[in-house]
Length: 307
Image (cartoon, rainbow, N blue to C red):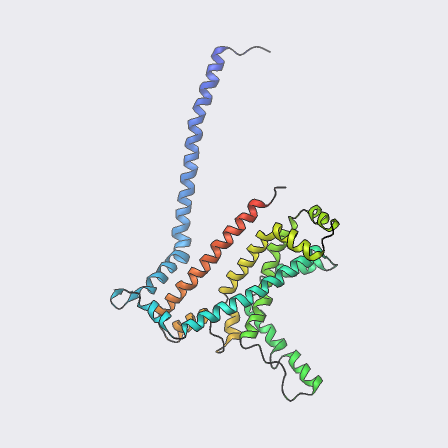
């Protein structure tokens, strides 16, 4: 094989040196094109749909008769019922999301560690269930467990009662039940994904050393799978906080939470400024939960092994 001449080597080096600036120019062009695409999406899509409504919401919440004013916040939070509304909102949130999270984790553990012949079918149903509108769950519960529902009428006929025995849906009990049923599947999927990353050899080793199921779950499974479980739980809290359809159907006038109070301020009291102030509070709470969810989910992704 003939040896390359010094002139050929010099020409090759010169060509390689010429390609480096060309690659840098192409890289800058791609970055510039990506920046313009982002600006185009921001102006044409995100601007009218997201950015402008948020800006108007913030501006409306600090608008008064004579310009900039925090009077809407004073009217909304100065209302004697507001503290009760916030307490009710937090109580319903922690009751519903907490029970839904526990139920979702239990279902995920059952599907993963104790599979049965219908496991795959049930998993697919839970994945489909998250696409259902929330008010459909509320109406389903009414048709089943309402005072004129099929279960209530059946119990009345079986026990020969004068009135239907079930009357708990239109209030706190019904809202909590509906939200637990609706949001538990949102916890199942990320928890299952977290369980799928576990090394079963560690669990088998713990069992061989004499650990019972409770010890394995508390000392082995939970420390290894907690990022995925936490991400699903925070997502459940975030979705429950922003739920309105179930509250509108089952809450009625007996249960006034923050979304209902905002809706009432805008449509009944016609005080859009006060409603905007309450919406800003809801937005701040939602963004806080979302940032926490992103942080926990990022840790889950970083800890996930590459396969």
